[in-house]
Length: 197
Image (cartoon, rainbow, N blue to C red; front, side, top):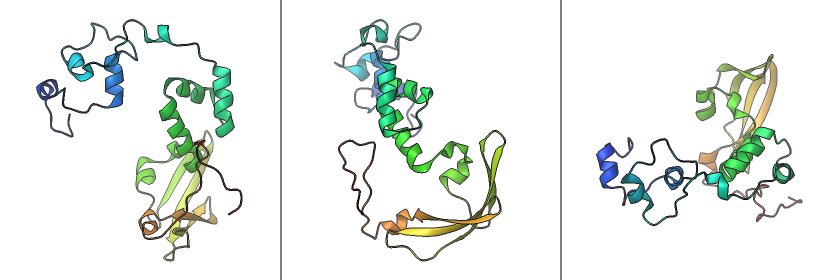
């Protein structure tokens, strides 16, 4: 509403032509239960048109879920699965899969400060990252190499708790001009992994 500068009445008037997020549509269908006092009408009817609706408790019509099998299936692709991940996958399978793929690729980024995560540290900047209770890493960005590797990566030099380290980081802007052959996604069963590169 805010992004499109819509007022509540605008949403109601244009509900049949607006594109609502999947989560809103599923809410109005009754996938996450019935709100106290019922659904807002005529908004619900305008958004759903002829889509199916769930009356009563959504879980009544679902088949039983085998959490042990779900955990085994998840562990095949993501070895460090927690019970929280299993519960998340039971409720939101697609979102959980995207999160687990992201987490496997980039690690526990939830430990980083928001600005560091979104923008990255500036050269010469020091910051701390608490990875668990009593374990805090001191990180200082020292330099970023000018030269690109053939894969479109730049070497970033930094100190980790006072020890000099370096890591290759994909430069997405520079990589647009290069032809890069991405690796297969382990979470996507339709992609084949090549063992020889």
